[in-house]
Structure formats: structure tokens, C-alpha cells
Amino acid sequence: MFHRHEALTFRPVTEQRTHPPLVPPKESISPTIEFNFYNSAESCALSLPQFSSQLTFAAMIHPTAIVDEAASLGKDVRIGPFSIVEGGVTIGDNTELSSHVVIKSGVVIGADCKIDSFSVIGGDPNHMSFDIATRSGVLIGNQCVFRESVTIHRSIYPDTNTLVGNNVFLMAGSHIAHDCDVGDQVIFANQVAIAGHSTLGRGVFMGGGAMIHQFTRIGDGAMISGLSRISKDIAPFLMVGERDHVSGLNLIGLRRSGVPAESIREIKELFRTILLKPGNPIQVAANQPTPSSPEARLFLEFFISSKRGYAKNVVA
Image (cartoon, rainbow, N blue to C red; front, side, top):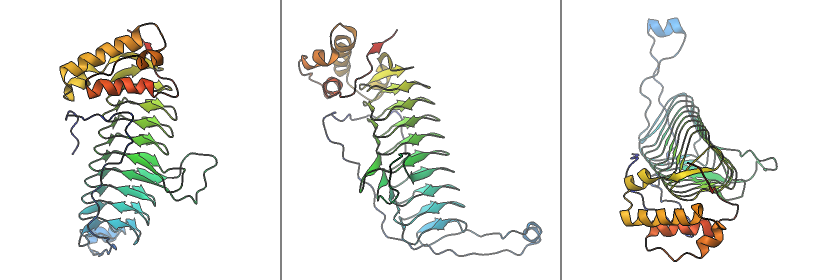
């Protein structure tokens, strides 16, 4: 399951993202549910039926859940009361849906995930010109935890997915809009919302109530403080708060991730050169020699590849 402090391997910013492999369901299940009613005095007094353990051969589905026969469920999938799983959904082995979860058509969920109550995955995007007949979806990795009332919208483009990586932890009320790409081991505290087409790198931490503007990039290992309003690209390993205000490097996060001391030294030097000294940061970054460490190269390449501007207001 999720381990916050395990070592991270950061991906070069120029490398095209490929979604982590999912553990496919071993077989498609057409859910069959056995109802056992108990005619006890208590159940009669309540005028409600009492159900026994509701199990299929390879999945556990509560009798009040609605699971389309065209949904594909892996081994030991658990679906709680009043949840809805539409046709065209794939759920990997050992994934659990609590009560009142809605999984829309076109969603693929990996293995060992936990989705809590009142979450809706794969809903229509908040886009004024979106055609609801568009076939799109959401692709979710393995070992993810989504707490209460999480929403993730499907892509606005045909045959395209909103992407969520492995070991992602979304706390209560979090929202991921259409066509976002959220990397592995990302954490959202309560009520975080990211707008459409945003990209979050590996190991990003978002404090409670933080909001991200559409088309924004957040680099690997960045830390965004609670209630921040982010409208510029955030370079890897930065700590940012308020309105795009950079407060320094996420040094504790780098050390916990197992980044070598020499790599951290190179990142510090690039931070001082690009963000603290006079000059156009893009031009300054382009004139720097190539660092020896992959983490420092990732930091440098982020500025060179920026298209929408980036957070550069360094505050004490």
C-alpha cells in the first residue's frame, strides 16, 4: 500500500509519460447475488429485509449495489451498499468500493485500490462545449486511496483518458478535472482541486484547499502549501505557497526520497543561479552546463521547456 517516504525515481521532463502497468482482472465476472432474508422479529418490526454475507465466486457485491453485467471485475473485488458500477468499467484485483460510490463507463481502476463513500469517478467534464456522446475515460493505477467525495472527470477528447498514477492518495473532497495527468505517489490533502489539462509529477504534495489553474505543470517532488492559488508552472522540488510564491527548495522531501547529497548540491546551485540572480530565467537556464545528476537535469530542463511562465517570486 502507500508508503509516503519510499524512494522516488524522478522522470525527465522531456520524457513522454506512459501510464504505469495495471494488473488486469483475471476474468470478467457477471455478478450473481444471493439474497438470504431473515424473518426475525427485529426485521419484521423494522419492515426491512436483512441480508446475509453477499458473495459471488470471485467478487463480493452488496445486494443493494448495482453492477452492470458488462463491467469487468477482478478477483476479490468488494463493492459496498448502494454503489453503482456502469458497463465498460474495469476494476483490478482486490480493489474495494465503499458504500455510495459511482464508477462511470470508461473507467479503468488498477489493483489494491480503496475508494471511499460518495466518490464519483469518470463523470462528465465541466466543459461548456463537451459532447456527452464522446467515448473517453479515466485510467487509474494500482494501490490508490481515494477518501470521501473524491471526483475525477473523464477526458473531453475521444478515446483519451484522464490519468492517475500508482500509490496516489486523494483525501476528502479532492477534485481532478478532465485530461489531467497525475503522477505516482502524489498526495492531495482535503479539498484540493486541479483544473483541466494540468500535469503533476511524481511525489507532489498538495496542501489542503490548494487550487491549480488549467494547463499548469507541477514538477516532481514539489510541495504546495494549503490554500495556495497556483497559476504558473512550478519547477521540481520547490516549496510554493500563496499566489505562486516560491519559498525555497523541498530539501526534506529530497533527502527522504533518497536523492544523493551531490545531486542536492547541484539543485541548490541551479536554484540560486536561475531564480535568485538577475536575468531572464529561461535564458539563464539555457546557458547552464548540463548537470551530472538526473535530478538536477530535471530541474534545469523544466525551465527550458516552460511555455506558460513559472513561479519565480522567491520570498523569505
